[in-house]
Image (cartoon, rainbow, N blue to C red; front, side, top):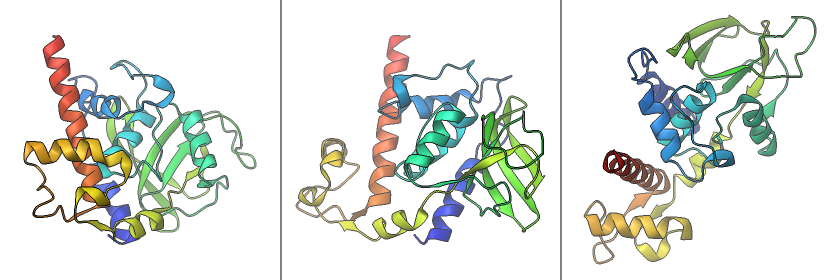
Length: 232
């Protein structure tokens, strides 16, 4: 995938969850996706009654296999710290974002000068025409929905700007057999071969990094769901 395609993949994945809300419990699937991903940020499993805006952004990153460039967290302040650690943080309120960027807010922003402290909320930019930013957010009025605001508007805390170019390069790599896989993927890729979801060494795998990550994430989510059902 190109960088543009990766950005659109994140946006379209998020848009598929529009309308999920707390009142009917449909937001729980988002929490479950986050909790099924290991390791959990700070070892904390998000509950269904927690604030879930950062959890939503993280869950979309997990589904898209982008956690290397769009890190997982369940708290806005810590999420910003992770973007800083990846050299992917833009502090300037007047930054003109692209679809697939992550926007953070601070509801205590006075509107005077740059907002450089605090963090209250977060969402994924779906579009920007240079003047108006459209954002999809989890936990906006207790649901997944849209917000629009002006570039350099009040309450903008800053932006996480994932380095999609890194994944665009990685996605070009295709693995032909288990021996070529990175060490982190071998155990679950072997399990997928045993389940018949992937072909074994005799015929080759022929999977990209992106495909492999998606399959492993889905395997983890399925196992977590089965375990939850058994415990009930």
